[in-house]
Length: 301
Image (cartoon, rainbow, N blue to C red; front, side, top):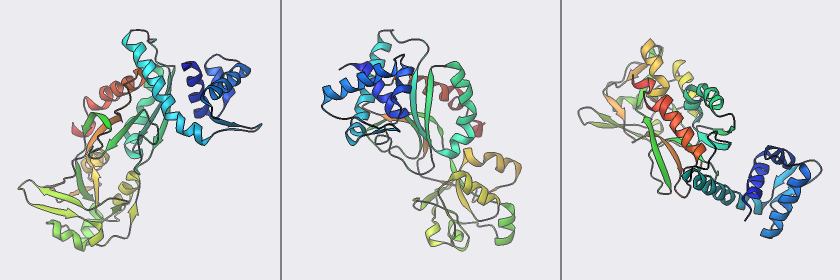
């Protein structure tokens, strides 16, 4: 199978523009259209729907796309193993990550990454709601949850300590809880699709942070919005230390039940499908994030 035609198909699927995909590969529009037509003929399937106004993926094209990406990834890795990869990495990296962490720590770094590698493009999916790495055909993702999926490989970026906090104003009005059982009488901020969180004390005593059994009038699916609501006095919330360490330091947030931590085995993982090879563009991005964040996480120093 002609991998150049596969590369053209993947670019056209990403851009939904055959001419633009062809130009990126140095092809005239007519040549690009002809190559895609030959690929479809060899596969016996229409991969793209074309009209005078737009290009869209067919159902067969959507099913074939992750396999095309994998074939190209294998080719890039094989060339890298033989020293045939250009030093300047090129192509599009599809990356998924929690939006709150990305806004605080990743987005400010991207101009430097793109300056280092002019041929690299980033296609980002940033959301604090759960996503499927494999179904989404992502090259790499950042996950801040326990890693239990056996189909994934991972590199640890940093620890993800989680704790409870509230604003001084909220605690002044509603009182300070001294034991997990006291939380039942408080306003707790609920994160969507999040089950009760186990709390573990330094002494070994345990408890739970469970908005379902307390007063919970606010359910949120975005970490930054949860922090803003907590700062505004909406209640007590469970947060990652990387999200609130500045506010804890300047006193705009106060740690609640300071002897307890949320025990849900969370770590910041950089993950990719086990079936995928570690392509040069993925390796470069992983190494960059480890250099800029993992080597000395600011919330731990």
